[in-house]
Image (cartoon, rainbow, N blue to C red):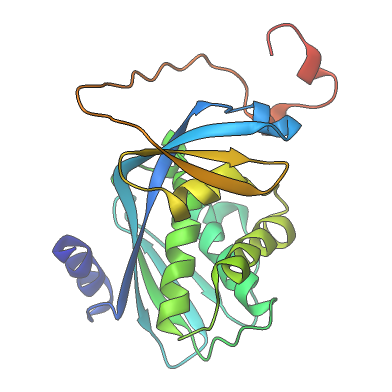
Length: 227
């Protein structure tokens, strides 16, 4: 946590008011079957994404990703999706999710993202950024927002700002995973369950089979033999 605090202070000259964390994940079963509203069996990874925030007196948001050494900007009154903003669009989507749902953000924030796994590696890191950012914003601005409203914030950001599908298994993994458990997401019921698993003396081997991402699929390609 000190490393995250120091990174934020080095960038903005002030220690963060709030630091939130959320884990990445991988899917043991169901990486693609959720597309058909089936179940997903997932596992959080113990390399979390940290999002540090300090409040501003104006309506500006400044974003800094420590490992990428990248900086982006936005304004509360004119949030726009920009292709070149890549990872920062995830945080802008969360801000949009709050404001479009009637939550009042009385100012802007300086935000630092710290993650030893980069979004390009997969592992649900972009969703972890969203969840950690949303947790941090809720705390920073003192918003009264229970888990149901919190999930709706992220869903609005995904569907209305990013124009993306809602990846429930990623969101549930980032929000509700527990130590020594796998998490089962039922996409039809929009529900989850933590299942205790004794991980001692066990290893998980990850293999990339180069199956195309769901975003590349359409009705024809879904039923091609290789998919």
